[in-house]
Image (cartoon, rainbow, N blue to C red):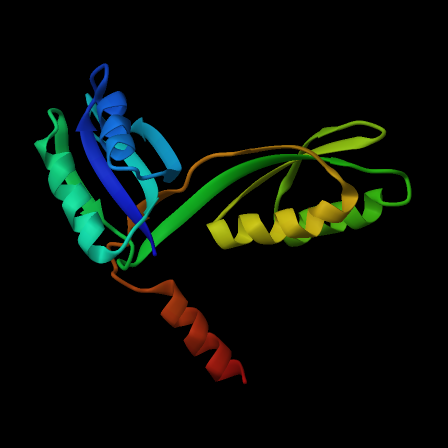
Length: 174
């Protein structure tokens, strides 16, 4: 199972290297990694996605706390949260396919950030499912390049699980 960890660290040189070294020594691959400043000066938030069962993730969490500069580690996998990713995707287009590509961009509320006669660069932001869905639809045009950020997230203060709300809305509208 994939787990998402939110780690607060003191913003000092080498902290990311020590964390990735810990994972490498234990044979774990980090599937997604995003690092940026947190709400407090001198603190960074690292959001990472790693594969493992609950027991393994618990052990990794304990190991992370042993590292210098780690302030907080939270497994947010099953906690209602707001998740986002950013993807830039360059696709081939022609005069025959341009309208269809633009329609997909519109449906996904993405943005065209560069256009040429035969290429489009699209910016799309959203939950990981949205990113995968638009990528699959754009594959038919011919993907030239992709750049994706890692997943970032914040725990919902309301504790409302949006998956639960989606299920309720579907049931209500049926």
